[in-house]
Length: 123
Image 1 (cartoon, rainbow, N blue to C red):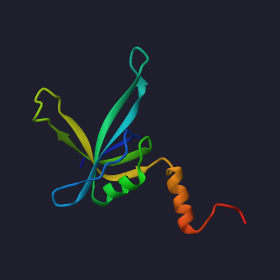
Image 2: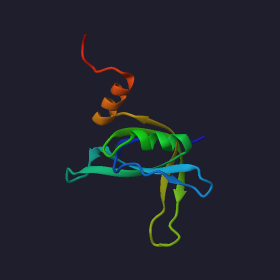
Image 3: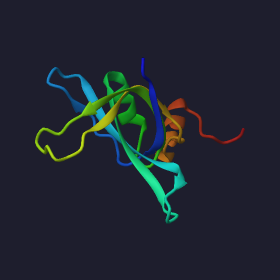
Image 4: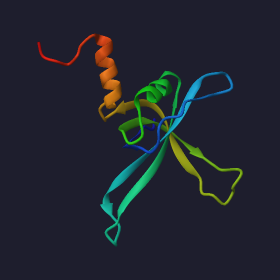
């Protein structure tokens, strides 16, 4: 069994899509800096694609936002580009787990507090 985990910052807001059968999915793209620099001292960044499905995709669409830090785990799938045979094959993580490592957006946290009936003020 192969399991891969990647941690990074989301490069764009999550766009929820649907398969022909109506099941939701989303492709997340994260940027992750390497721990070392190249010979010229430049920081190296990898961009990793992550596919989430079903309820996990819906949760990502609800809570993840551009710039948030997240960790995704799952197996990986090699992808080829039939329309462009000169393009190198790549891979994407087929995530079964996603952990949100950034706090909620300020607007979401305020909305959650007002739904609970709490004002955040001390009595």
